Amino acid sequence: MVAVRQVPVYFYSSKSGMVRQFANALGRPVFDIGERDVRQSVPDGPWVLLTPSYKTGNLDNDTIPEPVKRFLRDPQTRRRLVGVMGSGNRNFGSHYQAAARDIARRSGRPVLFEFELQGTQWDVEDARDMLEQLDARFAERAAAQ
Ligand SMILES: Cc1cc2nc3c(=O)[nH]c(=O)nc-3n(C[C@H](O)[C@H](O)[C@H](O)COP(=O)(O)O)c2cc1C
Image (cartoon, rainbow, N blue to C red):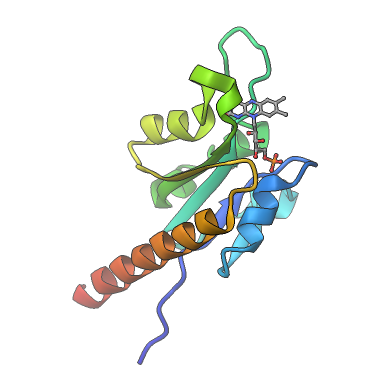
């Protein structure tokens, strides 16, 4: 049997590292967009973005971290994006998950999963299940081609 490709998760995490902690618990290839060589690479197939939201107080209420914007500049990277996961904090009210939701809307891709801060162990399990279903769907699609 051919091994099923695990869809990689590309994440951005600030110094507080909450998203990093979640990403590292997913049990699949994860790449840190904060690293320059990762940011300058192009995913080799379908990939998932995991981003926090950061309200910076600028006029256009932008909450997408700059490294995430830079990574998404490449058209092939954008084409291969299959969905977005977000970490946020409900204290930010109407800006809750603004970055993940904004990227999803602009790219026409779904928000696959949302959690607060570093997530709970149940969030991790649910995200792992969701990503495994995604792997299986891509494997079926590849087999049908
Ligand atoms: C300055 C600041 C601004 C934030 N803005 C938002 C926001 O607009 N919407 C939201 O849902 N969460 C917001 N958050 C919460 C973070 O997205 C959340 O804590 C996330 O888990 C941080 O991930 P990280 O520690 O990996 O960077 C903000 C947090 C900080 C410190």
